[in-house]
Length: 250
Ligand SMILES: Cc1cc2nc3c(=O)[nH]c(=O)nc-3n(C[C@H](O)[C@H](O)[C@H](O)COP(=O)(O)O)c2cc1C
Image (tube, rainbow, N blue to C red; front, top):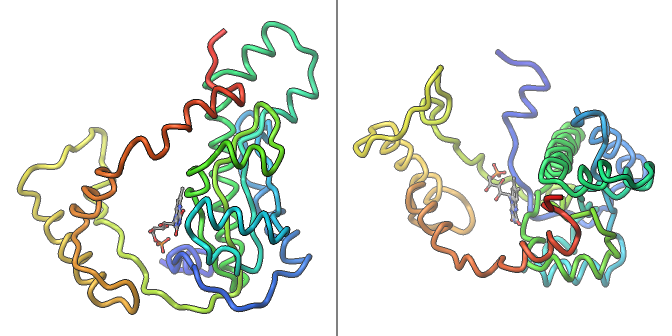
């Protein structure tokens, strides 16, 4: 089965190298429009987007993420979970306060921002633009709060670096569906799972064949490396969530 939408979705690759061409105002507005027309939990539109154009702020984001290439993107968007706008629309009562600060509403902001960013990725790709979602902004949330003057009840979720692609990376192979799409019951992995072994070989081949950052690694090894990272690296996250007024139980 194929059509232009599926072709765009199935051709996705994250792009980290861009030409010097900046996005036009029309392109930026169109991308935000696509983001805005995604489903939004309880029609509350509880996320915001900050376009970062100030070179000093972009340099700070380069430092925070360690990904200085973002400074050379055609445009950089910062996505926030945002209950603050809605908090300004209502009178504070015990119920509104409890709701705005709840885990439920924090998650709703995260869901809204997550769905919106992917629409922007796909809309960009349909226009020939490339992008990378950047969770690495979470390396220093307190600094982001200062840098962008984020009020309470907002929280940075990710960045999106967009631009005209100056690279054509290989498509990263995803796992066979039987490892992640189940029917009626969850299916844990068995120790000698042949499908997983085959996928590990696919990933090893992918890393060895690709043009840049070649390495020898299976998917299993990749996950082991990711999960061996120092959990303290993001220890400030919980404090930052509390500082911004989220996850409170009244
Ligand atoms: C929530 C999220 C956060 C991400 N953060 C980063 C990041 O900080 N830096 C980066 O280079 N890529 C980041 N990525 C991109 C992933 O590394 C990428 O999607 C994954 O390796 C699969 O590659 P592909 O998008 O080219 O298919 C992020 C992706 C998601 C969904």
